[in-house]
Length: 450
Image (cartoon, rainbow, N blue to C red; front, top):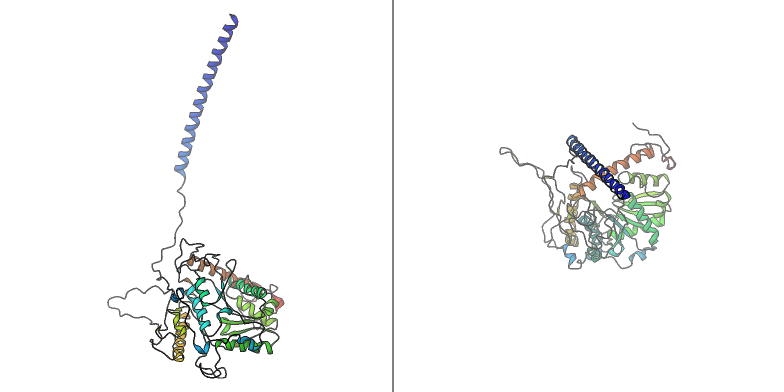
């Protein structure tokens, strides 16, 4: 009986203690929650709103979409080239050459420009199977799969190029200009090329179809030599007469004959000088190591920033007028005041009208249009505005803002110029005459300019 009373008393005591503990705990939790709630509220009230990015103003003018300058390639084979430019099969063997000379053309942006360069070389007599287009876009397999639209800045139509009969080689990643040149060198090892030609993609190539004194008669006349034939002659002459040749320039390096051994001897292109000034660095090192660089003439290689509206003009289609349209035109000027007369520069962009049945006369119209292209590129707007002509591709694989890409290249270009100055301690390209520098002086001299 006594034990039962003790147990009951103990149970009641434990219950009172437990209830008291729970009440105190709930009060503490309520107080803690209240304190935390007040603290967070006060903190939120005291904090500033999160920062917001400031966006660049939306452009007030967007160039119109670019057009395919050779749409018929999608449905038909290309027409024949002028008869007098058709290369004789295996003609390179008649010059005692080791291999058929490859022509390498690098591509990053602006497909119409690339297509124009390729078609112009083909119609000037270069066998398409000896042309290698190097896709240097960084788009991985997107172009090979046909996943990029024409308005995508890095669009390249593999199918059309294969219809033309040329080879397409892809770089594994996007390369700078200097890196691309070293990639060409690597191709010479892989394919055992003892020599190769390379060309910029922003050119239009024409042979001397109207004849050129001491070089070739007029197209169609006995003894005529196409652009390709004159390149074969220069290559043979170089190999026969010069053991230390590095390059042969046709219109500076717009078209270049390259000796891989010379490039290897100077250590290749300096990839830390990725763009402008890298040519000066490389060509001067050739001179320092006693490798020759001479100018030669195989035709008219025109530096352009625009493509012909219809590349059938290069096939001398009498129904096509040679003319061009700027893929990235400047914004239109504001309308003149009511009392102000309209004024402005008029740029001629059309050649003669259609109906030129004589291929030489048609060639003259092409030559005149190419000259207009050259002067249009070297006018006040800048040489490389053509690179920003495409403004589409959003949402497609590997999309990269085109204006941002251009701005990034400008930054890399300026950085490369500074690398050049520090490497040589000299502020311009006159490294030998103006700086007294030798090959061994790279990165060893103090700067000689302020």
